[in-house]
Image (cartoon, rainbow, N blue to C red; front, side, top):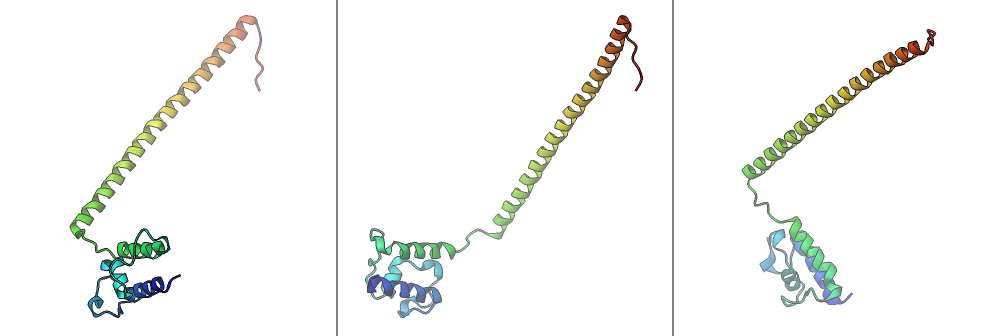
Length: 141
Protein backbone atom coordinates (compact mmCIF):
# COMPACT_ATOMS: atom_id res chain seq x y z
CA UNK A 1 0.00 0.00 0.00
CA UNK A 2 1.32 3.44 -0.88
CA UNK A 3 2.22 5.85 1.89
CA UNK A 4 -0.35 8.33 0.52
CA UNK A 5 -3.12 5.76 0.86
CA UNK A 6 -1.90 4.82 4.34
CA UNK A 7 -2.14 8.49 5.32
CA UNK A 8 -5.72 8.51 4.04
CA UNK A 9 -6.62 5.47 6.18
CA UNK A 10 -5.07 7.17 9.21
CA UNK A 11 -6.90 10.41 8.42
CA UNK A 12 -10.18 8.55 8.12
CA UNK A 13 -9.65 6.95 11.52
CA UNK A 14 -8.86 10.35 13.06
CA UNK A 15 -11.99 11.85 11.53
CA UNK A 16 -14.11 8.97 12.83
CA UNK A 17 -12.60 9.40 16.29
CA UNK A 18 -13.30 13.14 16.16
CA UNK A 19 -9.60 14.06 16.50
CA UNK A 20 -8.58 15.52 13.14
CA UNK A 21 -5.26 17.35 12.69
CA UNK A 22 -6.78 20.14 10.59
CA UNK A 23 -8.67 22.76 12.57
CA UNK A 24 -11.39 23.12 9.93
CA UNK A 25 -12.54 19.52 10.51
CA UNK A 26 -12.80 19.70 14.30
CA UNK A 27 -16.38 19.01 15.35
CA UNK A 28 -17.33 17.71 11.89
CA UNK A 29 -20.47 15.54 11.91
CA UNK A 30 -19.82 11.91 11.05
CA UNK A 31 -22.29 11.95 8.15
CA UNK A 32 -20.32 14.78 6.51
CA UNK A 33 -17.08 12.78 6.15
CA UNK A 34 -16.35 12.46 2.41
CA UNK A 35 -13.42 11.21 0.34
CA UNK A 36 -12.51 14.84 -0.30
CA UNK A 37 -12.32 15.62 3.43
CA UNK A 38 -10.32 12.45 4.10
CA UNK A 39 -7.88 13.46 1.34
CA UNK A 40 -7.43 16.94 2.79
CA UNK A 41 -6.99 15.59 6.33
CA UNK A 42 -4.29 13.25 4.99
CA UNK A 43 -2.43 16.23 3.52
CA UNK A 44 -3.46 15.74 -0.11
CA UNK A 45 -5.62 17.83 -2.40
CA UNK A 46 -9.41 17.35 -2.51
CA UNK A 47 -9.31 15.00 -5.49
CA UNK A 48 -6.65 12.55 -4.28
CA UNK A 49 -9.12 9.69 -3.68
CA UNK A 50 -10.75 8.59 -6.94
CA UNK A 51 -13.23 5.85 -7.76
CA UNK A 52 -11.22 4.89 -10.82
CA UNK A 53 -8.21 3.82 -8.71
CA UNK A 54 -8.74 0.20 -7.76
CA UNK A 55 -6.34 0.28 -4.82
CA UNK A 56 -8.45 3.05 -3.25
CA UNK A 57 -11.80 1.26 -3.64
CA UNK A 58 -11.79 -0.37 -0.18
CA UNK A 59 -11.25 2.97 1.56
CA UNK A 60 -13.89 4.68 -0.58
CA UNK A 61 -16.36 1.91 0.30
CA UNK A 62 -15.56 2.29 4.00
CA UNK A 63 -16.14 6.05 3.79
CA UNK A 64 -19.43 5.54 1.95
CA UNK A 65 -20.68 2.97 4.48
CA UNK A 66 -19.63 5.17 7.39
CA UNK A 67 -21.50 8.10 5.88
CA UNK A 68 -24.66 5.97 5.38
CA UNK A 69 -24.49 4.57 8.90
CA UNK A 70 -24.35 8.05 10.38
CA UNK A 71 -26.90 9.72 8.11
CA UNK A 72 -29.32 11.84 10.15
CA UNK A 73 -32.86 10.58 10.55
CA UNK A 74 -35.06 13.18 8.89
CA UNK A 75 -38.31 11.33 9.43
CA UNK A 76 -40.45 12.81 12.18
CA UNK A 77 -41.90 10.82 15.05
CA UNK A 78 -45.43 11.36 13.77
CA UNK A 79 -44.58 9.83 10.39
CA UNK A 80 -42.83 6.89 12.06
CA UNK A 81 -45.83 6.34 14.34
CA UNK A 82 -48.21 6.39 11.37
CA UNK A 83 -46.02 3.83 9.55
CA UNK A 84 -46.07 1.51 12.55
CA UNK A 85 -49.85 1.88 12.92
CA UNK A 86 -50.28 1.04 9.23
CA UNK A 87 -48.04 -2.03 9.61
CA UNK A 88 -50.10 -3.18 12.61
CA UNK A 89 -53.37 -2.64 10.75
CA UNK A 90 -52.06 -4.52 7.70
CA UNK A 91 -50.94 -7.39 9.93
CA UNK A 92 -54.39 -7.57 11.57
CA UNK A 93 -56.08 -7.58 8.15
CA UNK A 94 -53.75 -10.34 6.95
CA UNK A 95 -54.45 -12.38 10.09
CA UNK A 96 -58.20 -11.92 9.65
CA UNK A 97 -57.99 -12.97 6.00
CA UNK A 98 -55.95 -16.05 6.93
CA UNK A 99 -58.48 -16.99 9.62
CA UNK A 100 -61.38 -16.59 7.16
CA UNK A 101 -59.59 -18.86 4.68
CA UNK A 102 -58.93 -21.40 7.43
CA UNK A 103 -62.59 -21.40 8.49
CA UNK A 104 -63.77 -21.81 4.89
CA UNK A 105 -61.32 -24.69 4.42
CA UNK A 106 -62.48 -26.34 7.64
CA UNK A 107 -66.10 -26.00 6.50
CA UNK A 108 -65.29 -27.73 3.20
CA UNK A 109 -63.47 -30.51 5.05
CA UNK A 110 -66.48 -31.10 7.31
CA UNK A 111 -68.82 -31.20 4.32
CA UNK A 112 -66.56 -33.78 2.67
CA UNK A 113 -66.42 -35.84 5.89
CA UNK A 114 -70.23 -35.83 6.17
CA UNK A 115 -70.60 -36.82 2.50
CA UNK A 116 -68.14 -39.72 2.94
CA UNK A 117 -70.03 -40.96 6.01
CA UNK A 118 -73.33 -40.70 4.11
CA UNK A 119 -71.89 -42.64 1.19
CA UNK A 120 -70.47 -45.31 3.52
CA UNK A 121 -73.92 -45.81 5.05
CA UNK A 122 -75.40 -46.03 1.54
CA UNK A 123 -72.83 -48.65 0.52
CA UNK A 124 -73.62 -50.72 3.62
CA UNK A 125 -77.36 -50.45 2.96
CA UNK A 126 -77.00 -51.38 -0.71
CA UNK A 127 -74.59 -54.21 0.12
CA UNK A 128 -77.09 -55.64 2.61
CA UNK A 129 -79.91 -55.28 0.07
CA UNK A 130 -77.80 -57.06 -2.57
CA UNK A 131 -76.91 -59.84 -0.16
CA UNK A 132 -80.58 -60.24 0.71
CA UNK A 133 -81.49 -60.57 -2.96
CA UNK A 134 -78.76 -63.20 -3.45
CA UNK A 135 -79.70 -65.03 -0.28
CA UNK A 136 -76.40 -64.40 1.50
CA UNK A 137 -76.59 -64.15 5.27
CA UNK A 138 -74.27 -61.71 7.02
CA UNK A 139 -72.78 -63.02 10.23
CA UNK A 140 -72.36 -60.45 13.00
CA UNK A 141 -68.85 -59.77 14.19
